[in-house]
Each structure stands twice: as C-alpha cells, then as structure tokens.
Length: 272
Image 1 (cartoon, helix red, strand yellow):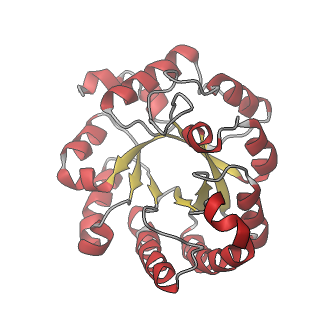
Image 2: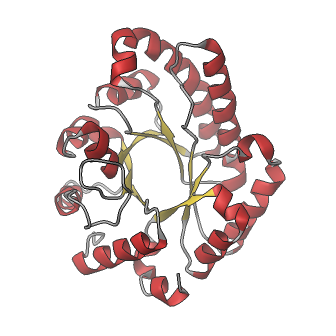
C-alpha cells in the first residue's frame, strides 16, 4: 500500500488503532507500513512467538513505535486456549500463555489489552457454574498485572450468543479497569444479533469497539460499509449517550483498510 493512499486519512487514523499481527511486525514489511502511514497498532499476540521469542525482541518492536510516538493496544491470544476450561492441563497452558501476553504490558505500555472469554454455548452452558469458577481464577491475577500498569482489560464478544456471561464476569470480578470490547463482525457472524441488546446490557462497561463488516454469515473481516452492519445507528447512539470508547479497525487486507478509511471519511462516522 502506498503511503499517500493512507496518509490523507491521518485525521482518522490518529483517533483509532489498526490490527497488526506481531509475527508480521517481526517480518518487517508491516512495521514499515505502520510507521510510514503513522498507524497506531493493536498488536495481535496470536502467535507461537510468545513461546519462542525473547522478551527483548518484543522490546525492539515497542521501541520503534514509541520512538515515533505511536500508542498501541494489545490483543491477547485465544486460539486453542480455554480460560474457563474443564481440563486442568489445558487451563494450565492457557494461564501460562495469557501470562506471557500480560507480561508484555510493561514492554508496550498499551492503552488496553483485549481478551476472549472462550465461552461456547453448546459446550459450557450446561456447566456454567464450573466454567465461571475456573474463569474467575484465571482472570483475577491477570487483572492485577494490568492494574499495576494502569492498562484496561477488555473482554471481547466472540462466540457468545448473548451478553449474559460477560455481564456475570464483570459483576463478579468487579474491577474498575475491566471493560467490554464490542466486536461488530462477531455479533453478526456468531451471535446473529443486533448491537442494541449488547450495548443496553453492557453499557456501564463499554470501553472499546472492534470494527469490521460481513454479510452476517461468516467472520469475513471486510471493509466497513461493504457488509450489512448498522455502523450509522451504532455511532449515532454513542454520540447521543456521549460514549467515547477506544476504536480499532480490524481489516484483513490493506485494501479493506483503505476502503474502511474511505467509508469513515465519507460518512463522517467518527465525528464526535
């Protein structure tokens, strides 16, 4: 992607974050694109690098962004992990990997770290008390790590079909720096619901938005405005209620990023 293709939208990119898988940052090309276009990254830690790379290698990436005065957020890993799982060995590995991700808070100094609950209705609903007990024990020490650095922890909706489990965890964990990350694409792809019931139930905790679009059938991560999500309705409500969450664009291609920025610009979506 050419620098000039993005830099014209700097008034928008200065107010939001853009997903950046850390493996691609290590490879170099993505890091150059972010620096050249002054994009603030949401650094995705979905990688074996948490096992294989020395913390000093992550520090080098952090130093580059900090040198260019670009703030960031983090996205904790979630593939193959089960924070509220029933197998003690799986839970043990989950906690170790999440712990490695949270240890990078002091390196990157992020505005937030986004996490997935790993709750699946068809697996866990019939034993939800057991799931909750394990999940609480997983998250409590991690929340303490984030609190020491003043970093907010965001629980994102993924496969959950209602806001119930999020609300229960927010109430029971009762942490002032714990917030909700509303993922627009996941609502349609997995919950098959509009944004209204989620915002209504979780408004006190809303802290971040993950913005991408789809046709309601799959988690396509296409550009804003290219699918069927009601972005205009959501942002109109946020303005009305004077809510100001962190904003993260989650395109999966450079072209989807460019199209998303064009859509935000033409619709004045981010105008307060």
